[in-house]
Image (cartoon, rainbow, N blue to C red; front, top):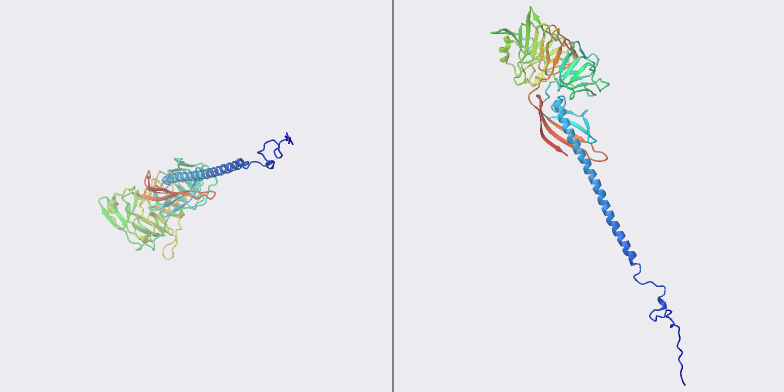
Length: 472
């Protein structure tokens, strides 16, 4: 029998597209590596993000570091600028850091590089160039009439007044500080300050300066020692020795008070013209390094040159009703007391109003304590005049030599005809001053402090030498 095979024209079962290599069981399933590109992309994005974040963090840190460095640099520059200004101010103003150990903190503040800088200074050397803590004149009176003039006057050096008023006065080579001022923009109309700048009129809330002024431990001895007379080729010279005086002094035409300390109780010291003869009084020997004689007394020159007293100069302490009057034809010169014993009290003073010390000193009650009047009188005081509760009256019909070279401290001052108060007397030597300038930190930043040690000559032009300079 013949077998017949019937060939089908349809693809084999399980191969719908005719491809025997494909199995219908794989329909709807992707290849095993499909989606790996997404994973790689995510890894790339994550890695790039981490790098960018790291870079941004680095940049932010760098920016902050730059700002910190810039801020500190600004403070360093500001502190340096403050030191430079402070040193120049010290050179121009002898009242700052005038006393050894004194610290002046204000009003000393400047703005530099948008930074507030506080300045301080401490005197580590000798005192200032003038006896009254660097001031030429200190007026303690609070009344508007505490400083008056008649025909003008001149003060050479800085002035401090509890109430300046409006005197007709020329102030040279120093600023004027007025405690009572209500307007700080300009000086009173009759007060002339030169040169300006650098010197100026300024308001102040600082306390009235009170220079050192200690009295002796006890009254000087002996009491009322009699004068002696020295005969020289130029005539007789009446000589007085240190001690306590309670009786009127009969002055000759030429008089010399030996170097030392004197206390006068209820004694009027009148230096005038007697029988048409001028009276001259010389107090103590000068310090040869910086004091020069003004009043010429040939009769007493030899006595002065051979002064047996310890140290130089003289201190007159006036108690009770004691006072000094220099009239027409009177010539008085007192040198600053220096080199005496510690028991004598404060050195550098020539005239001092006594304060009450039971059993020792009677408080001064005279006002004026010192007066200068008449024609052509001379009053030259090389040391400080300390009378904070009394009155100084300089009134003369002709231009006098009225000079207080160690500064003066009075409650009231009157300058009459061409009255001159010159109170600048440079003590040879150098002040050693530590100056600091602190730029204040803000927003938690630390302060930056610059410190300099400088030496300033007391004598003009007050040369400055920088010993050290550091910033921390």
